[in-house]
Image (cartoon, rainbow, N blue to C red; front, side):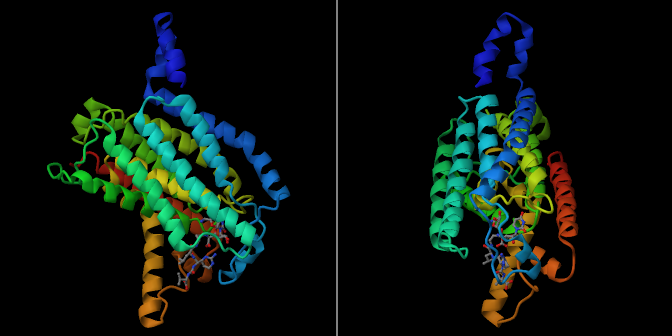
Amino acid sequence: MLYYLLYPFHDFHTVFNVFKYITFRSFWAFMTALVLGFVVGPYLIRKLSALRVGQTIRSDGPESHQAKAGTPTMGGALILLTATLSVVLWANVKNAYVWILLLVLVGMGLVGFLDDWLKLRRGGGKGLSARQKFLLQCVVATAAASLVLQVPDFSTELWIPFFKRVHPDIGAWYIPLMVFVIVGSANAVNLTDGLDGLALGPILVAALTYGVFAYVAGHSGIADYLQIRFVRGGGEVAVFCGALLGASFAFLWYNSYPAQIFMGDVGSLALGGALGTVAVISKQELLLPIVGGIFVAETLSVILQVGSYRLRRKRIFKMAPFHHHLELKGWSEPKIVVRFWIISILLAVFAMSTLKTR
Ligand code: 57M
């Protein structure tokens, strides 16, 4: 919004030119969400505690988690609020991608909020059924995918990392692909969010990585040099990533071990869904399994565990997702979390390196 309010003044003074620059607005979107998060965070924690919006802990989890019962949850509402306000303030509000990203962030957040709220109301962790949750997520993802294909110049070519000349045009098949990526990443983050700060580390790394991808994809000169697909208007996605980064950093301040607040499904589904949407718009969705490798590994551990248990009545891990297996092997929670963050950073560095090797 500030872009439209203040950039026109550059005719009177060149200082207002800065509002044109995506790097400037991405940085201030980050700072705005960060400061808002620190200002509202403590109040929200007190409020959720007073309202007794406390996490119920399932009995079949690691024993150590029982001590977490009553931790304020649904804190993801803070991430959504601060990120959305910052995006509306600093992004180019006439850019369709910005509104599609906000649709997914808020839409997935509402699905998670409904699930969290029902768990609270019914007690004992009985939220939406898996089918209801999945269907609602697909509605949000399909709406977003359909809108992306309406954006002029959006290419339905699928760009494949490492292969510079292979980018088949998959046409309308892009819609099911986008739905798979958005719903898949939402649920992968949801599963990973099972230790204090565990999910936020990879989220921060991915938001920064995809912020860079979006910026270069939206810059025709750099996109051409790197031989990646130019996405007209794609640079604004970097402003969205900046806001997500600031909101998530501020939340991590309170979610770090020992957590004062959990994000709830309202946070994990929203962040995961938004991440998947950013990956598709910046035409780097096939790098998401690398950048979000921790999310993929955690989801795979669940699939393997459930599959093995159903087929062989035997478990592969002591418990799924994999972070619970490490807990039951005696790893401390902070050690698991920081090591997962380190792996995330290494994966992102590798993913960035593929930008040039085309
Ligand atoms: C998503 N949620 C955490 C918190 C957070 C089929 C099965 C794989 C389903 C899966 C599942 O859906 N789990 C729910 C993970 C939960 O965190 C809440 O949920 C939000 C995120 N969605 O924001 O509100 C618990 O995680 C802990 N936590 C922290 N710190 C944090 O910052 O300690 C969360 C955030 C919280 C808290 O204890 O209560 C979760 O784990 O439920 N179910 C599972 O993942 C369960 N695994 C399981 O059933 N394994 C089976 C196989 C057959 C799949 C097995 O291995 O035999 C685990 N989850 C729980 N208990 N809670 C293990 C059992």
